[in-house]
Amino acid sequence: MRRIEVLAYPDIQLLDVSGPLQVFASANDFKRQAGEPAPYEVSVIAASLRIRTSAGLVLEAAALPAHGGEIDTLIVPGGWGVNAACDDPVLVQWIAGRSRDATRTASVCSGAMLLAQAGLLDGRRAVTHWGRCAEFARRFPAVRLEPDPIFIRDGNVWTSAGVTAGIDLALSLVKADLGRHTALAVARELVVFLKRPGGQAQFSQTLKLQQGDGRFDRLHGWILENLAGDLSLAQLADHANMSPRSFSRRYREATGRTPARAIEEIRIEAARRMLERGQPVNQTARRCGFGSEETMRRGFLRVLGTNPRDYRERF
Image (cartoon, rainbow, N blue to C red; front, top):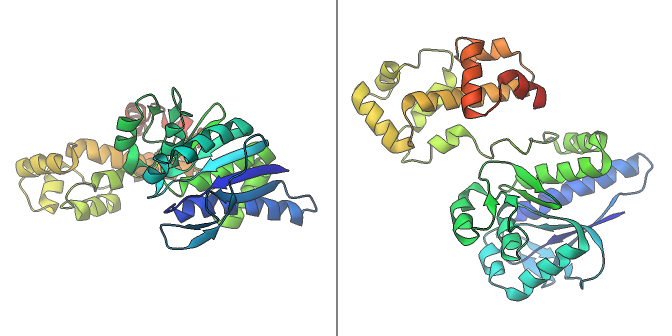
């Protein structure tokens, strides 16, 4: 049986805790139903026996175990309380020590900040919630932070992106422990993907474009509905009720991209979703407005560093 400890602290993100917990619990259920012993013993641990999450729900936790007892996995979630937790030298020291007892250590969301504070990520590749990347990079320059992936494994340390990425991470841990068949059964039970590959972006291109002042949000929705149509500069400007020159200038001010670059990125994101569902490359190129497979191939190579056929095969 693999012992897994999930650390809790005040104002922790509830789903960072409950998401991975449910994945391991469902893996136990699947094995029991097959007449096999449960593979995981999972506990929530904390410095206090009652922990209030940022959602207001109170968790009952076991005491922090003493160092020395071996465990399989230590999971450190994130949440609004992570900054205060990073300022707790006793907790940080405990994490550093407990990680030496663990076969592998993992973080969910901004929990990566606690791993970094404990010195566990120095020189390693890591990821955290996209909204905390700038702060993380300033505070922990020795970490090789990558802002986009869903999760990253560097040696025996795993880090994952925002909130629901903890489920993707836990499914990958189950797959590593028990095989694809069990991980797939758990994913079906939870009605989620078996896994979003770690290299996938943790939030959509459309959301990135909507981080500005919101003046083009309706335009982006229209673009998504008309990917195979006329998305020329003149057409976009007309839809936005602006002159082409004014539209180009204001769009770049709001999004940081030219309209042409934004259209390409939106089309590539839509194409990725189709390819991940197994759609043919030629059909995907046509429906996403690329005009030809070759145009889509060049865009994929420029933005993703791979071609559509290899992407479809991998994901």
